[in-house]
Amino acid sequence: MLDVGSNTVHLVAVDTRGGARPSPMSDWKTGLRLVEQLDDGGAITDKGIKKLIAAVGEAAQLADQLGCQELIPFATSAIRSATNGPEVLDAVERDTGVRLTVLSGEEEARLTFLAVRRWYGWSAGRIVNIDIGGGSLELTTGTDEEPDVAVSLDLGAGRLTHSWFDTDPPARKKINLLRDYIDAELYEPAKRFQLLGEARVAAGTSKTLRTLARLTGAAPSSAGPFVQRTLTAAGLRQLIAFISRMTSADRAELEGVSLDRSHQLVAGALVAEASMRALGIEKLDICPWALREGVILRRIDKESDT
Image 1 (tube, rainbow, N blue to C red):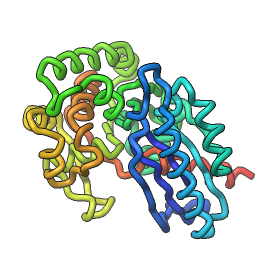
Image 2 (cartoon, rainbow, N blue to C red):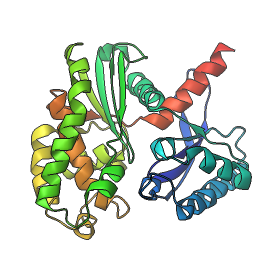
Image 3 (cartoon, helix red, strand yellow):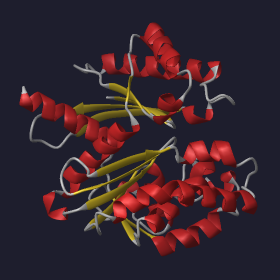
């Protein structure tokens, strides 16, 4: 599986069979920050396209070396929203032989929700999930494997950092303006969620939320996927007050924060805090499965149906 996200190009080789938990056999990724490779008109720059072609080509070669029987290549927000997205897809296919499938925002949300549902099971009842990517924010809720509501908004941590912050650390005025903007974008979607009632499980997926949870005291990734990790609204508010005054270099020194994503952390935290507040969530359970697992599970389901 080849995931061209807004921050990274990620290849995961997975051993799959019906009824079994997907087991990653190999994992490779490279930082790309594609959502930050946009010009003023919203097109991916020539430099961004060249970097993308090189990354996809390297991933495809590695998949061949690993003996992967099938490559499932897909792309998300950065290419989805780019004004030259079709041209980018053609260029990638021409130079690498890989044709990326662009997931719609709703598809991305639904596949992520499928992974969360499978992780927590039917006993979880109604689930609400928040997923903060580099380019977009996905919000879902439901009692089945298909969510009742699936919303995708261009509120990704990388996209907002690129569009709103021009100093490091960001100016207090810019932070307040961005907070107001996020609140306005969430107002209508939140009303749809509120009509469906309170969820039994409030979950969060994505690297951004895992990092925020780690910074507020959750176990490190080395503890494994089965350790319960949570992010509280109170802890998040305190964290924002702390990290918003730091430079990205200083944030990168914090345990659990990568250099590639440290500059996006404030925007990601603002989106997380606003989303939890809009949906009336005081505590998020961090789910280790997200979009990639959803794509794999959907593929397994299709094989089982044939």
